[in-house]
Length: 67
Image (tube, rainbow, N blue to C red; front, side, top):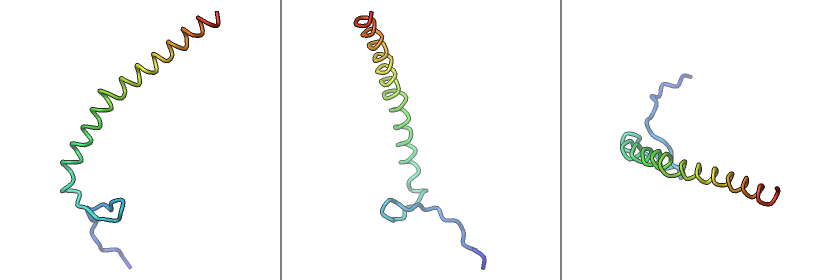
């Protein structure tokens, strides 16, 4: 027995609903771009500032109270 079916271009959603990838592509590309920009412009700089600030506070507190 061979599998002669052609591959499909659908994905099953979280509830088993099937959707067409060609119809979903522009929306998905726009959402991926928005997510990428959010990560690069907002989240990573904020995390960097928070981590560096936390480290600076820890060093300052260790010098202030630890001698």
